[in-house]
Length: 207
Length: 356
Image (cartoon, rainbow over all chains, first blue to last red):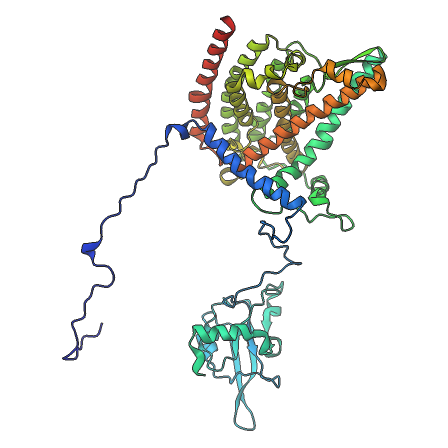
């Protein structure tokens, strides 16, 4: 809290939220002892079996003759054949965003390298003829990456974003998990959802 | 003489193939698939032959191939003899107990009387208890011989639990024996021709108590203390692999079938359809001639009996996937303080009703 106060500033009240005087301890009835009906076991067990049997019967009907136009009540996704649609907040493999001409947006400022808590990013900066900086090499060590998303948050150019890719992240060889700039480049359209999302959550609309 | 031999062999082959060949592998599939369906999942369905998955049935086959090629591991320091012999002691009672369970009435085919039970023993139900309690030895031996803490703890729990529930189970069944006045399972079955004479109407409390005890005796959830996965890895068969592991597994499934068979025989009219006596059945099939009628009646009996068995297998599976595991003291309290007194009261009331 700031110690300096302007003369016309009102007294800062330290209490935030509901005043303590109005708070009353909530009466909770913790009935740990079972009632006689529950102590008889048999009826409660029968009730439980009834619930599971209801699910069983419902799902058996769904297996044999699924109701028309209704999705099955089973939530399992047959993974390789079916995919879930991931929300834009999903943080998958970090990728570099390419411009329309196929070159990277990255200007090799080094902020992502600096902020990366796992030191997964290594950048070697270079300079073009028009005095524009670019990464000569951009190495992302996916064996170190912790998917925190700091790189994307700190990037001033929206050049690195967390994509929704979640396959092929694990390899048998650590050397195979070190990705170069060329491996990471993705077109802007493919990560458009995430770009819109980070503009909203990181207030990057002023870029 | 020869006819007797053929009859016995046919019955043995039939029950053996139904139990070992059908129920044991299929129940492994049923357990997975039923639990999946009950929990809004899909369950095992990926094993396929030429692209046909047969709703996951090939997983049993894949499991069989897997256990056959697995290493038969015996831990260092284990007692090799008892470690090897324990699964057999577990499995054999599970197979043997079904011999006294009748799966049909007695009919005359081509002048030869066929009784649809492998061994019609006078002691009947007592034989079931005597043999099934031998499984406790297998459990205790396997736990002790493995030289593993998990196994030993599992075996200790199993021995206490199985011995306790043995007592209670014996007492729960006395009511039904008193009502029917015989130990012979075939006679008990034959007496339930009348729908309102089914054991469940005469001994409803006895049924619930017996079913509870039987599940506890089989060591399945909610009484799976001896093999509690979350506490003891796999309990008394932690140190087993390959075929020996599967023998414990098969013993458990065959006991499910046996329990279902005994419950059906004692409480749910054995091989009888409701309101249909064996005589009526024979008259109904009379169009096929006397021998054909007998054969058709036998088939009807077998189908009826195994339909009931399948229902009780389903019920046991449902209970196993519905209820959470008891705490150990709760298991013991349920046995000694609830089931045992209730069984005694049940005997008392049954005796009073019979006497008056």
